Image (tube, rainbow, N blue to C red):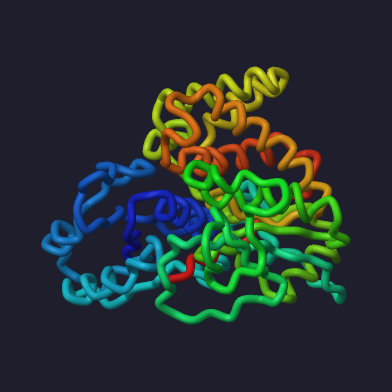
Length: 355
């Protein structure tokens, strides 16, 4: 059976890495895309080909297994295109399939621990996860059962309620007016300043209304039973490294402001951070679930850096409305937990991308 991966970005490269580690006797032939466009011409040393080109050259299509490794919202039309081209052996790499693959790769030593690989316990932790919602959110196509511990918080809160939110990030101590730049992180800031000091919860988490950790009740018992400090999304893999990847989302001058802020606030961490930026893994989406003390330490480190970036960025604050600080948060989350990989017991889980 010939193995082909559909996709050519972070999800596809991550699936390639996990698949090759989990299946050492199998080789991936190439990556497929609808059109080359902004996609690379090669990935992981393999060619990136258009579906049309590959289909024309493929003699025995029944001998090809295609792993679709793209965002879930485009999988439907990709499957239609594959069927139209005569391919029938198709596996959608989402939710359970992707979690199982990453867990197996973790078991074989990929470099990060899967929460699903730990023994379950008998005791549920006390926890709340705060889900950032915005007036700009598009309605979800499907209905989902959201766990009771997941509490919507309206970020950039102005006017009426949104998506049934009971919490608003423009009350108490807040940076709600900066939501255009911080995006969902104005919600995390609000949780840090207004809820975290007073809560008795053992764990606190943060997610977005379309992106959340894929954790069952049994998975939550794994956290208490194994004294896990934090659960992050499975990392996505980027070539050649995460510093180069940021160019897709961040201007050079904003990146320079970030490096300047880190150098000023944490000069002792600069050598380690330099090494982290040269590696390939990124914890996307500003999503996490952590012990209260760990979340406190993370926020105390994160937000002063972002405030310095604002100060050094040109233009800054109300004179711009791009989500550059929100994008930086993903890189900073990666840096912080890699810096503290020896201090914390870190595990990973799948991240649901709701559509």
